[in-house]
Image (cartoon, rainbow, N blue to C red; front, side, top):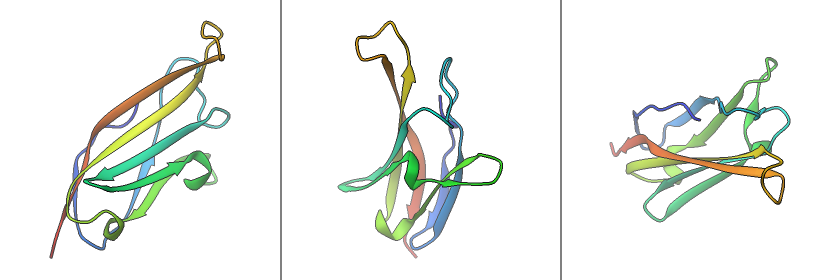
Amino acid sequence: MAIYLEDEAFLGTEKKYHLEIVSEGFDMETDDFEVELKRGPNVITLKKNDLVKDVNGDFYVTFDTAELGPGGVTMTVTAYVPDEDFPDGLRTEIDKFKFLKIKSH
């Protein structure tokens, strides 16, 4: 569903990552999704409208590593896929993975 990568950055670095969610029946342009970045007790939650969208329609996750602090960061991507087989008309898909290691200076 999401791009898997593990990167490293120094504390205070501002990061930008292209996000592409691929799931049958899901369209990033019209369907809802959210991204959570977590390092220990520190969490950044980004709704679809919080992401940067370029002229090509690509979505980018942007954040300052200082908001999370040093250590391993996980990314959780939640996509709400239209699917009439579910009572609310949506199939919730969740993907979680190691994403970034923030190093102190």
